[in-house]
Length: 410
Ligand SMILES: *Cc1c(COP(=O)(O)O)cnc(C)c1O
Image 1: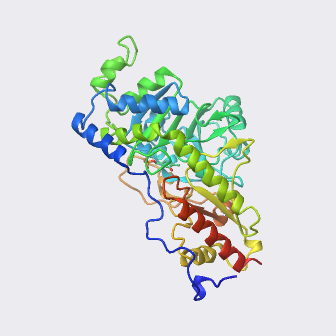
Image 2 (image 1 turned 30 degrees about the vertical axis):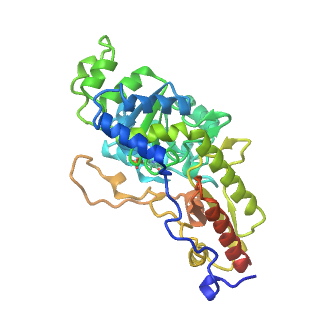
């Protein structure tokens, strides 16, 4: 076995950074952006590229309606208001997630109750049930790192307790559970198109089955001309079409143009990313230190955002953090312990007594969430790549992970 780079050996990977670039910028994408620049840089209604992207996105995820937003965070904010959640109401959210799954609810003074995670980092019907209280009106789940939650059980739980089901599908654009695309069972689902599998740079999409929710989503981000042309004049909320509800959260037309371009290639993106996920999984299958952490594919299909890895401390002579340092020394600079996506349950934002005060000093007692701790302490991620020329990264990262694992295996 070759010596670890950290101990004076040669690094496995000697490739210039960055080791992950997304989206792939080819002549075709450049052309699409320039064409849109010539056509229009501001869209007041859904007749141009904004409508094109929304329709393509709705078809992509199999949703009846899709409404675009300037960010996933803005889409979640709209979702909170369209759902009718008010101060005094509560929503149950994952403790382990990207902060924006829950922060817009807190902005609105809605109480956020945090649910524990399973071995994939996801909430379950059981962990949600622990947080049930009389004021809980909705549940939001995240399919964290691309692994789908058990939506059969979670949808049944929400039906039984008369709760709205909201989904944050930002990590799982290509994910499904029991043959249904993620988001299908939800009252509303959000897909950030920030640096996600389908990306627009900045942006977010809200999908729903219900026409009334769709119209209300327009009022919470797309006032005036668009609302006046798309909301039926007989609707009881039509008088708000001119002003909307006070906020504007439109997606930039250039972002939508990038999104349309991405969705035309969605099949290729999916095929290539699945291939890489399968290859990495097979290459680490016999590795006692590190393996991919994937929901069994008979249950659900992975959403193809990143590749999540599970570190087994009992099988290693080093800690998870030391293991990552050794990988970095091998030149695998994208081997990562996530810092932004983590347990958010003790953040002061969620403990403010007055949501309208500019800020208040509060101390939050963190809830006891052993599943979250266990998942977070053993999790590592690497990119899923998925573009021309990515082979040397895939092979290099597999080699680096296996080399470090062999050196530290207990
Ligand atoms: C990226 C992300 C968001 C926020 O979306 P933005 O488009 O960055 O505002 C929300 N939830 C999850 C799980 C995300 O990964």
